[in-house]
Image (cartoon, rainbow, N blue to C red; front, side):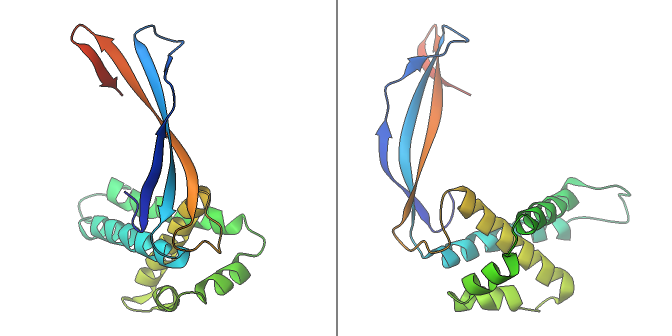
Length: 169
């Protein structure tokens, strides 16, 4: 579950048989992904999770033993590339960022913190941009507040077996 969110108003649609297999039945669920904090704070909580995960991966990486990119390094590289691409695809990202960060003192402190040096600062900023990108792609606008929701859906498949219906992945 994404921090600072909750799922509300789950509605099951009628299911249908999968056209690719007579033994597969699909059911769609519509729901609202609802903010439990204002958007800047929600982004900060997710960014901290990203930072912790990547930092943990990097701390266990032994550069002496491995001469190529390791999956632990890849998580940092992927975070960096995704966040840079997201920011670079915006004409006004620096202005947008500055306006957005003024809405949350903790977010501004997180972004501007130099604790841990230059590499740690970059990781925090990439983590914040990645989290912001996630919430934006989820349907939240920069002015979203606690209680605002984005409409989502998910589809679950079931397979008919000798023992009845089971969830199919």
